[in-house]
Image 1 (cartoon, each protein chain N blue to C red):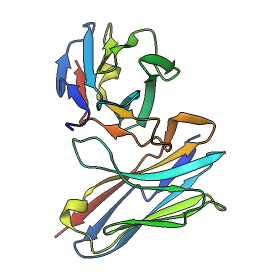
Image 2 (image 1 turned 90 degrees about the horizontal axis):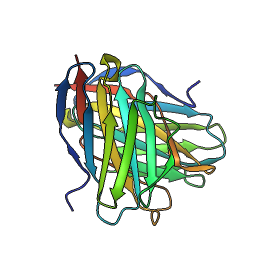
Image 3 (image 1 turned 180 degrees about the horizontal axis):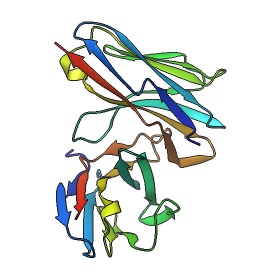
Image 4 (image 1 turned 180 degrees about the vertical axis):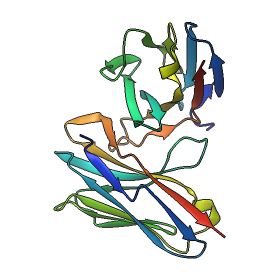
Length: 115
Length: 113
């Protein structure tokens, strides 16, 4: 298995632009998580899905952030409009309910820089 | 307040030496605790996971301990190697909230030749 795949690996954009991050979870996993990591705040859960349905989006910072999971093999995290404080590394992770302890497998991350 | 506190924040050790990282948590009701290793520029990778009834678990040169009574865990690295240079993150899961993990801030370990 290729593991969790994220694209792009790096994104540099200007303030006000729309940014779309993409994730392909491990095949067969029914949970998908989006995280943001910064030096100041560490890893923060933004939102997670179960069987393509958003379960908890309480970590989404504000309305500028939105996430979708149209099918079991693809999810997007969109920021519109982007701001410099959104600069961070965004991770996608997936897990399976069959693993009762929720072992999450992380992707390589997308490093976002908003100028 | 963060429910998972790690110490030290960072440490430097000589190659071949041992070191121990600490994790204190207040997450309740407790389900499990795991240690992740995060190399620079990569996503976290699970090293060990322990449930309430487990006191110790090893993964090669990594040994994790758990005291559920005092809500403390440690990660011991034996005979450190340069490849052990990374951030080590303590993560705790609550029985009440399967999907949401509580992350510590991590301990940055640098192994020098």
